[in-house]
Image (cartoon, helix red, strand yellow):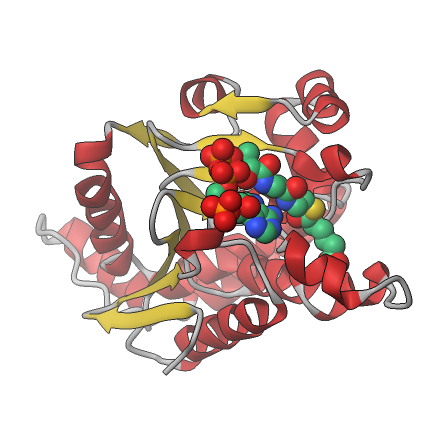
Length: 260
Ligand code: T3D
């Protein structure tokens, strides 16, 4: 269905795989468009309760395709290109009211790293690495890296990565708090699957509302956060999954959440 992205749904799990392996899944405009469309499709499908974004081959994504970049010439505004492409994708991933796992199978560089960080849960293979490659081509970090990276690993390490463009291993990324878990290569797929299955059986509406509250709280005062929590808790408290969770607890049985 797509030229540069593999999309499949198995049970409640949608898997989107960036698929330009000979370019380490660098983003050209087609792949950006198709990735956005695949997320839109997964968001609209009520049966889908978790989305996994990964890469084929040995890379997660090497960021902007520099061949395409050069072919564009000098008259195109990079800012406009970001607004219509990566910015939409990153916003979509953060605002989608379903959990998004980024399964980082290999190198994540430039905008590819920003997109890896935009996942709600970041799982990496021990072959993965992270690079704020922007400075190596005379650019500044974009696609959300300036916002996300210091929040995850603190300003000292974030700025060092940004101004040097040095590559950081999955193990260092884990110990710095950039990602959630690292798996030996042979166990990576199974580890991702276990997480995806677990989240697919979770109360999806509550997770969507948690994302909303979490995103808002990153830029709000305590008073605003308290009020927003109270508002969203009314919504969560009216869901079938909330009723099921309480019943299951009282009946001493595992809950059966339907994402409703
Ligand atoms: O307009 C806008 O929106 C601007 C937005 C900009 C956002 C950005 O992402 S800027 C940063 C762009 N990305 C980079 O600068 C990273 C470039 N790539 C690398 O530095 C290296 O490839 C890696 C460190 C990521 C991996 O190195 P390595 O040695 O494992 O692989 P390689 O041999 O360099 O790459 C393998 C192939 O992929 C190679 O092609 P070949 O020689 O086998 O035909 C290489 O050219 C290609 N490739 C890798 N990255 C890109 C790429 N082709 C196009 N664009 C790339 N970004």
